[in-house]
Length: 550
Image (cartoon, rainbow, N blue to C red; front, side, top):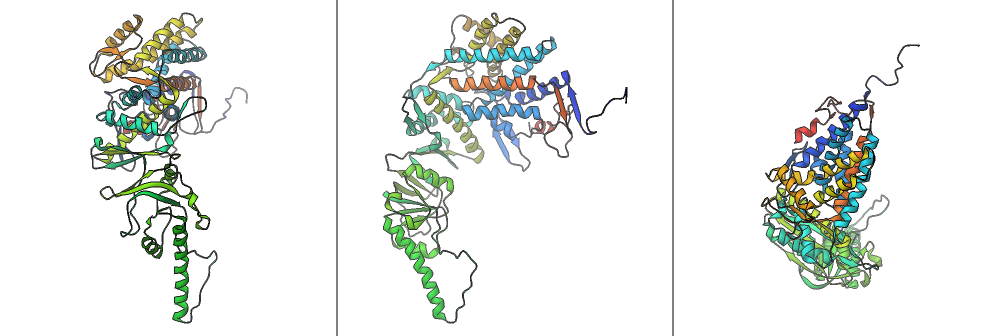
C-alpha cells in the first residue's frame, strides 16, 4: 500500500477545496444578491416569476422573489434564509439585507486575494457589525406611538416603489387606524401591537382607492336559506363547531322495517332530534349561527322559522378570528351551550360582494379587517404583499419606538463612523472593518443606480454632506436631490436596519468560514435529472433553474 493513494469517497462524490471552495460559495451567494438588487428603492424594477405550473407572480418584494426562484445550490439557499429571517423578525428590508450580504462577500473576496486569512475578515466583520448596530441605535429618533404622521411616514416609505404607492396616503391612514385598534398598553408602560388581530381580505374588480377598514370581520358565505334575515344591529352570535345534523351511530348498524308506519316513526325521530338542536340554539338567545360544519335541510327550515340567521361551512380561520372580534366562545357541543358563550355584534349582508360584515359590540373584544381592492388578481396580490410589509414595520415602530432617516442616509452615516472606528482597530481586522463600511454604502449606490442617477457622484455628495455634520441627509430618488430624509417623510425602522446588518453579517461569515465542500453527489440540493456542480451555471452548481426564471 505504500505510495498508493487511499480512496475514501465514492465515485460520484465531489470535493472542492480551499480557494476554489471559497470562490464557489461567494459566487453563488453574490448571484442571489445580484438577482434582487435591481428591485431596491422607489424606482426598483419588478420581476416576473413563472413556476412549473405556469402561475405568474409579478413583484419586487425581495423575500417573495427568492422564495419562488428555483434555487438549487446549498450556499445560495443560505442567503435566501437571510431574507426569510429578515421578513420574520422585521417584516421589511429583505432586499437590503440580501444585497448587503452579497456586497460583504464581494469585498471579502478582495481581501482574501490580498492573502488576508478568512478568520481575520470574520473577526473584523463581527467587530464592525456590533459597532454598526450601536451607531444605528445612537442615530435613531424616538417616536411616540400617538405620532400619527411619523408612523404613517414609515408605512408610506415601506410601500413606496410597490403597487400600493399610488394610494399610499389613504392606505397608510387605514393601517394606522388598524394598528391603533389592536394596540394595548403593557404593565411596563410600553405599547404592544397584536398584528394577529388584523385580518387582510382582497377583492378584485374595483379601484385600490376603494379599499376600506372594517372594525370587525368578513364572512364570504351565503345564508343557508334566502328567507332568513340578513341584517341585525345588535345580535347575539353563536360560533359553532358542531354539525346541526342527525347524529350518526358510532358502529355500523342496520334497521329492518316491516311497515310504512315504522319508517315514518324513524323519520319523525330524526326530525325531532334536529328540532331539539334548534330549540337549544333558540333557548340560548342566539340570533345568528355561524357554523363551521354542515346544517341539515330540515334544521335550516326550523332555524328560518325562528328568525335565526344561519351560515354553514365557515372557514376555521374565520371562526377563530370572529372569536376575537365578538368576544365569543367557540361551542363544540350544543348540550353545553349557554348565553355566556354568545358574542354581541352587528351583522349585515353585502349582496354585491356576496359577503357578511360582522362588527363586534363587546368592549373587551378587538379585531379589524383591512379590505384591499384592486383591478386584477396580480394587482391585489402585490398590493397585499406591500401592505403586509408596511403593516409589520409600522407595528414595529409603535412597539419599538425608534425610527431612522431613509434614502441611504443612515448607511452613509454609519459607514463614516465605522471608518473612524477602524483607525482604533489593530491588525488586519482594520481592513475588514473598512470593507464593511464600504459594503453598507451599497444601499445609496443602488438607490441612485435604480433611479437612473450617477451612483458615484451621488455617493460623493452624500459623503460630503455627512462629513459636514448633516447626518440625516439622504437621496430623494424622485428629484435626484439630497435632503433631510426625516423632514421629507422618508423614514425607516431602527429594528429593521439592525436586523438587516446582523443577518447579512452572520450569513457572510458563515460562507467565509467554509474552505472545503464535500458532496456525496453533485453540489445541487435537487437530486433530479438536472446536472449541477461547481462548473455549472457560472460556478454555482445547479442554479440554472434560477437563471431561467430571471
